[in-house]
Image (cartoon, rainbow, N blue to C red; front, side):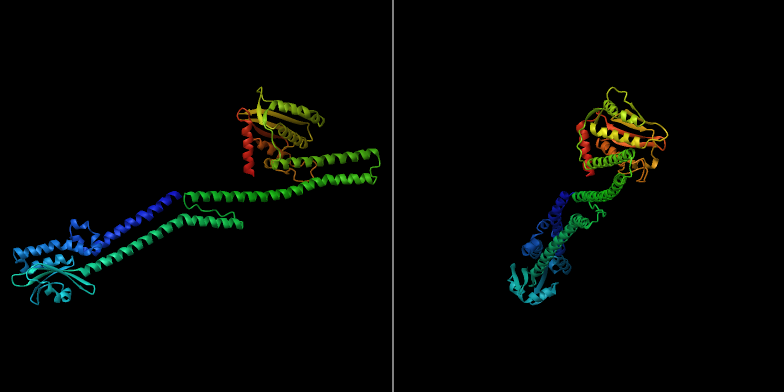
Length: 508
């Protein structure tokens, strides 16, 4: 249940439930305390409140018919008043109405049931017997109240009295009021406790759980999941809290992983820089000490020094480029690019250099007249140059090098592959080759050289283009790097830029 619903239910519980229970308690107590109401008939049941608010007035209404019955028998014939069986039935009928009859002749009691009451009022009854006329009065003594009615005088000279014990009725009224008050307090207390417990388990307890989890996070514990108690706003907050906790945990783990990778990178780059520096230092010392004592040796030393300096410069350039890409330090200039035309122009620039290194390169354009992709021309050129550079480094020694570049359509993507006939990549290494500083040959002293960042840069650029890249290779038979770029017929420049922004937010 939503919090809004709980508020409504709480209002209903506080306002309606106690009202219903108090009414039930009221009528139950009245009917229990005033058993005479059951015998009063429907015409008096509607005045149930009067039984405790004005007990004397109410009892007068209840006994009116009984009193009239006695008066009628007194006037029309007194045979029933001489019949003890009738008197017993009549006494039993009015007993529930706190009323009794007494027949007295002189100072002698002829008939009466409640002797305890008679002993208290005996000496007063004679004052109410005024000839044969009807009379009524009240006997009051220290809180003891009795209503006495002189019904009349019988033929034998005895007097008939109709006595109602007001004190007994008032006592019941006071007890009823006390029970009603106690019931009201108990009902409100139980309602309050029930409502408090319900609100605690549904609101306060989940909030306490959130507070505890917040304290755990402050202490550095990001692994304890928060239980969702209810499907409400607090439950949704718990879900959001868990998502935040998991996200923070992932960020911390990623940060730790990045720190570890950074340490490894520093170590590896230091090693890769130290190797050519050591060579340069050795050959410079050879020049200074005169070891290279002929022009031929000096030229050889200088050539080696220059090649190692170029190697160091390439490594630093690759590291700088990857750092900028990794930190989104490079702003892409996406545009619609004719992939066939772009690759043709780029290959013309490097074809001569490849031929000088005993390499053949062939371009297989898409058979379509024009195939456009959404790409950054400069960054895609860097991708192609990195892949061709890798093919040169890992060329086989027993055959002439060959590179084939193919373009094909794949619905929403354009497939570009760069395939060589080099030494290939083992199956188990084909996924790892796109990791930064990874080399198939784990030895840092490999004669092949390279920074280990070329394919990592390729992967980063292609994914920033909203595409994919993977390797297909067989050991000793060459390697094919396959890239998927976004087809301009299915996506706009703005959409690719938005994809890159979203990717940046996820990786942030």
